[in-house]
Every structure is written in structure tokens, then in C-alpha cells.
Image (cartoon, rainbow, N blue to C red; front, side):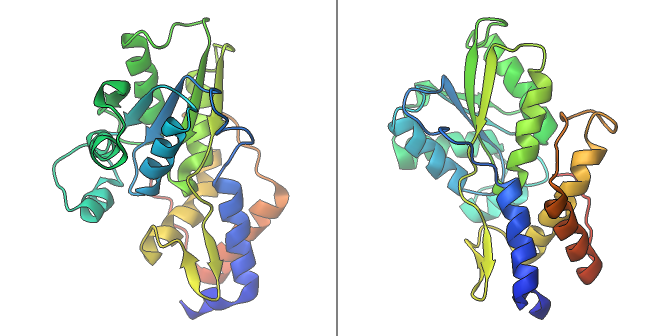
Length: 242
């Protein structure tokens, strides 16, 4: 733990988080989207940012995506809830705490990981008539900041045959590590390290030459070097699927 207080290591961590926590320019412009997609995770800030975007007029609808997966127990712990899907918990929070009308929320409760989030969201949007191939659809994706870039790539793969679909991402925040520790404290320390160091390898193993569940992700050389340095110095690399 003490090694993480080294300024050089802090800069490496922050370089990684700033790359992973994708925030596209113009993503929160009023009227710019057709639906806000909040992807299941243990990060409650996703709900707050999604609700703010809705009330700001970014889009008239919200879809919450997520069944019971790798992050669900962290969400249950944070909310004091058990045996509910991530999508249902997020949807209930949107209506109960953020005054989003329930009839303007679509719930997708079957997916258990990032790739399934994208696939099941497409199915839900198709079944509800919100998505019709070739007719255009503008999606705003909101996800755990560490998973934001990979989630975006999952949706790129799922909609790769329909150029009328446009995707924007906006992570609810960009994590920062400094002399005061990790801010904000949205994860336990071990969870944060596991997610952070596992994500760059997933771009390759889940990409077109691996599992094929995401599109190509170009990792800048400085980001790759920061990741390699962190892995080497800490001897920690957890590639558990999120």
C-alpha cells in the first residue's frame, strides 16, 4: 500500500484511469441523444450522472442494463439489498431518489458482463421498438469509469453493421490517486487494483483476435508502458472478467 504513495506511481495510475474513464466531448449536450444507457456495476455515481443527464434533457429515455454478475455483490453491499438485478436496483434508485418517471425507464435484467450488456441492450431496444436497424439511434453509455472504454467497444461490436447508430460515452468521474489516496472512494482498494491492472490485457484478449466480444481498442504507447510498469513494480495482475 505504501508504494502507491510514490508520485511516479500516482502519475501512472492517473494516466491509466484518464484513458479508461472515457468522457466524450458533447456527450451531455441537451437533445443530443435518444436514450441514456446506464450499465450495471457497483458504482452508484452512474445513477446520479444518468439522472442529471435525463433531467438536463440529454435524452428522453433511460435504459438500465445488468442482471446478476461479477459486480452485483458490491452493489448489494452499497445499497443494503440482496437478490435484485443491477438493472432493477438502478431503475428503482432513478425513480425513488432522482424523480425519473418509471415509464421512461427500460430495464434489461439478463446480462452478466460488459459484452452481454451490449448484446442484451440491443435486444431490449429492438423488442421495445426503440431501435430499428438503419433508422438511426443515438446512445449515451454510462458505466463504471474503469470499464467505460471496454463497454463502449462492446457496443461498437454489437452495432458494427449499422452505421446509423452513434455511440457516446461519459464515465461518471475520472478516478484520481494523490497523496490523500484514491478519490472518489467508489471501490475497495483491492477491487480498484484488480480492475485497473486487468483492463489493458482485456482489450487484447477480448478483442477481434481473442474472444471477439469487443471492437479494436488502440492503447496509446504511454498508457501501455504505464500499465507494464505498474504490473512489474507491484507484481499484481488480476485478469478476472468484470
